[in-house]
Image 1 (tube, helix red, strand yellow):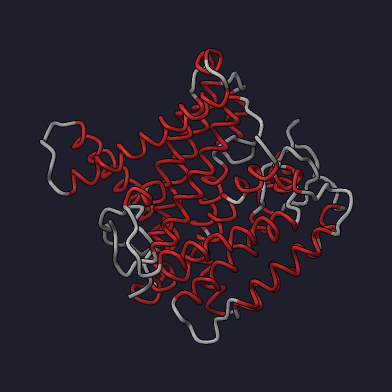
Image 2 (cartoon, one colour):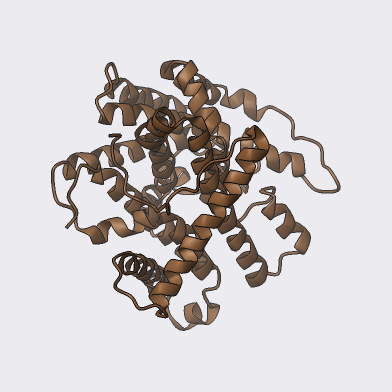
Length: 403
């Protein structure tokens, strides 16, 4: 059992979102349709949960780090994590290139984040958002959170106007500007693009920041206005005709890829309620550590778990029914994540020999962390001329309130 001052409900929410995301990816890999619209709706809450938790982490971890250690330290830690996410994203692009006969040109565009890569969208998102973390903190220091949230809501109110913006021109026979627009701004109307865009996700990020302030008891941080905002905007989004804003539509990827307000405020609203419920039911209670592993190893799960999913042999699906194949694939991925967690935990406690596989796994993980930290240090020196000391080994540690 795990019990401490950590907000274990947040860790549990991340684990739950990981399970939902891996389930969705496994279903896509074996070609299985959603069993029902309700199941699809629940599964679609995974990405909003991750984005909301990203905002919560800004309040609980990144702003206190900037205040205690300064912006250069914040920049180095954030950029190290961004590099880590990008390398894991590249691993997924490489796996897709090997497993599926895509052209090298398309794979190269995916590596530049100018293509649509299955399963790895959240890694792409984290890469951008961790890179922009110093800017995000600077904005939150200078502008009231209410103003930031109002701007983010205005983006969704302007949805009809944004969808009327013409598509950018083609460059070198490729919709490069269009893909960049889909990623950052989200005015595109193609339903196959991967959403939400960075701009449209800000309402969830800033909502997470406010939720984090409420969790730690910041004066004047009230949660009920945020819940009311999601309810009002969610109801408004349901009135928009021509976009199939139904339970069936919400359970598909269409509204998410179009950056429709219903995705952020209806599905995002239920994601916010799910996090709130998990925080409430776990406050002051013991939580089995096994329930936190997927969240604790979320980057490993998205990085290497999705690679396993990409290479899942079709012959298994052919010999088993789809449901059994999904369950088997999900079990394999979850087992690998648990094995990785156990290996790191045993190595840190000194319970492995010098040449054991556990030691090798820990050494590789530590080397990767040192490499990304050194790369972030080089980037920081290049941008500011300041050199930071090498940080201790970072981990996907559970979220805790600031000291």
